[in-house]
Length: 405
Image (cartoon, rainbow, N blue to C red; front, side, top):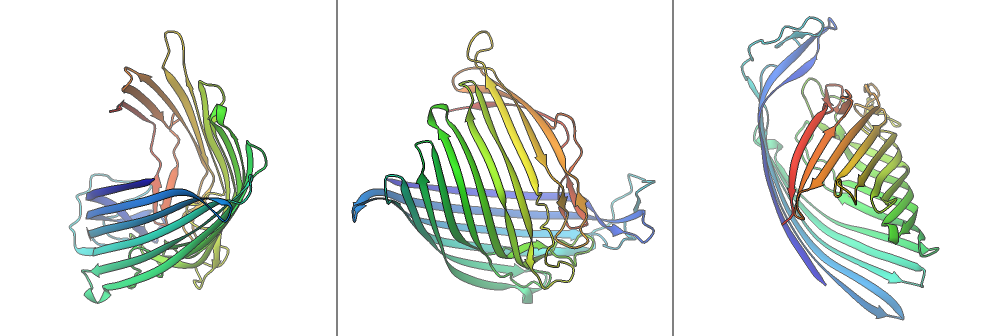
């Protein structure tokens, strides 16, 4: 069977923003800067794969062959006003709003980047016995990356990498409904952008191991999966501990490790009642580092140790409410570090509750209504070091129409 697809994405972001430069020595005055940015990107992705079934050496094989091509382009320009803590100040405890915006006096970012990737992948699923199945595969890739620093031409560069990423897995069916599995794989990914010296980052390399158990009830479209995992990656990008003010430079951490377990459930409890949910415990930290401010044992930024989500939906099948669906979602995210440094601030845990409803007007038209963050929880969604924290969305009501052609 031959399958293929092509996708093209094009986007841009233009606009102004006020951002902080840092806290002044008095502990109450924040210096700010006004910035205007022009960001543009596009991405072309093409994929084709061929799947076939055959017998060889007395074993049944399912062979998958494929090729991929991706061409990503990104260019940006950011102009800013002054970056000192005395520039465009505001008092945290006695703020005066409506100050005139300062003049743009400097260009802090002006660059252009292109990343092309070519890939060939091969995977063979082999039925070793009636219950035991092996999966063997490999991905061959070539990456070509070009970075142009328009502020400092000497900081422009080109690089290319070739990589082979193998994977291997086993699945054993204990019963028709219950199976255990184990797999291991390697990964390779070029890091986009440049460091504060306009130098290229080394590519990210990783190895992952996973063992788990899966229970399926096809008649209920229900599955439950539990797994243990251990992932090690080298050259993972994280915020540069030396960043000040609005700087958003990255560094490649020597080595980071993520390990833990997760459990997920998805399916129908009854024909009308559907549940999707999961829990994860993740212990993610720096395991090798040459940075004094990011020592070994530092937690990775924005990664909670505990997270949980549950979506419950019920669709009426009979009576005047037939077709009406209602649901509730709950999400819990544990405390996180705002940056991968020994002095990073803590972001508190938070819980949000969402409500939803939908109703079909016809077979092809459906009304949707969502009330997100029902209790208007105030929380920090993620952070970039000790300088920026992105607030979560407040209570939001959304209505829409879905049309199936």
